[in-house]
Length: 277
Image 1 (cartoon, rainbow, N blue to C red):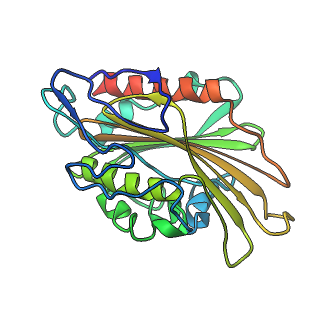
Image 2: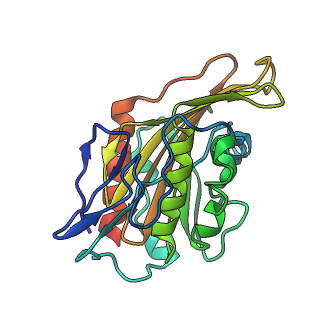
Image 3: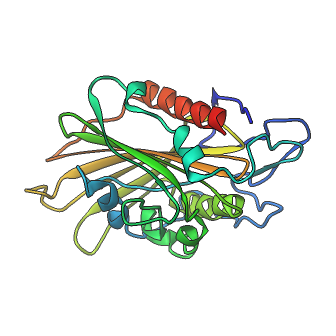
C-alpha cells in the first residue's frame, strides 16, 4: 500500500492512508485500543546501553530502538498476505542506494531471529519505560530480513530491519507508550553513563511512523568509552514493521546526522519496501 510521505510537524504520527481510515493512538490521549495515557517528559530511565552495544558488535556503539504510533486503516491492505523473509529482503536498501562512503557488512533473510538479527527491547528506552516496554521483544516478528552498512572510515553504521507478523499493531502500541514516557528525558546510570532520548520530527509514512534521537556519554570518555549518538525511524504499514537506524561514535564528540539526508533515506527505504510487498 502507498502512504503519504510529507514531513510532519508533530513528533509522533498515526495516519490513515486510504478511504475510511480510522486513526487512534493520539499523543496524550487514551486510544480506543487502550494505549496508556503517558504525558511527555514523565519518564525516568531504563538503560539504553544494551541496545547501543547490539549494532556496535560490528563497528560502534549506538542505540537501537523502535517506535511507532498507532493507527488502523479500514479498507487498506494491499500488502501481500504473510510476505516471506526472502520477499521482505528483496525490498531492503542496497549499497547502491547510499553514496560511495558506505559499504555493506551484512544481509540476511531469517526464518528464526538469531544473535545477528537483534531487535529492540526494554533496554532500548529510558529507565521509566521498563513497564511500558516489557513486551516489546516478544511482540517483534521472529522471522524477517535485515541489512547493515558501515561507513568506510568506521565512524558510523546503518541497520535496516523489517518483518511482518500478527502483532504489528500491538507492537506499535507498546513501543509508543515507552517512547512517550521517555521523550525529552536525560539520565545518568550507575556507571556514570549519561543518556538522552527525544522524539523528533521526520517524514510521515505508512499507517504510522515515529522518529527519535539518542545520545550516550560514558564517564571519562577515554579509550573505548566513546560518546555515541543514534537516530531511529520506525514505520508500520499493514502488518509490516520497518526499523531504520543510524549510529555514530567518537572519543569526546560524534558527528550529527544530516537531517535532510536522513529523512530522504527513510522515505526511500519505506517506498522500496512497500513497492516490493
